[in-house]
Length: 200
Image 1: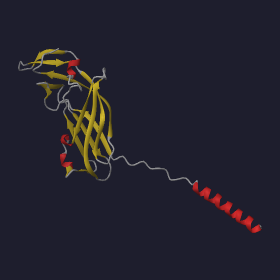
Image 2 (image 1 turned 90 degrees about the vertical axis):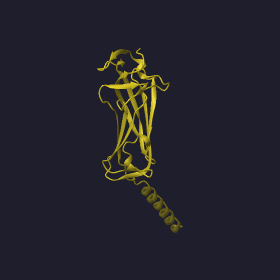
Image 3 (image 1 turned 90 degrees about the horizontal axis):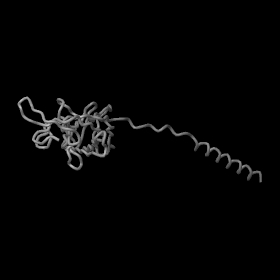
Image 4 (image 1 turned 60 degrees about the horizontal axis):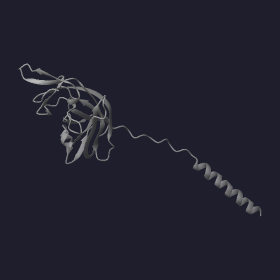
């Protein structure tokens, strides 16, 4: 009988020990290091975006998205260049469009070799995308502000728009197995020089 009681005490002690050992705290979960930093800017070479035959000329008003490797090691993976930007009028957010870019818009195409993207530490991938400056319904954004007839220094007539105030936000992805990076809301304004079209 005494032997049976000793066995019960021993089993109880083992259970208490096991339950205490299971409650040991795990080491805190470490956040993965931040490896990439993304930035978005609207290019502006002079104050205007020139529109000829209904389309922008040059790169004024284009979007430039940069992604920089801020990690201390080389980043390499299958190239999956995807940029998606939502653009809308600041005061009328229902008037909007979506601008998309891919590897064909990568100006630093030397970073991609055989469909593999390689980013050395502190190196930057640049995606440049000129867009049509129209809504999803193909209505020019300059149609939502007054335009005025004026003349170039060479005497060529064109329509000059009031400033058009926009908001843009989006995401960019470079690598197949990396999540997209967020490009937060950013406000910008454009003034259009519209040739070959009547003023409103």
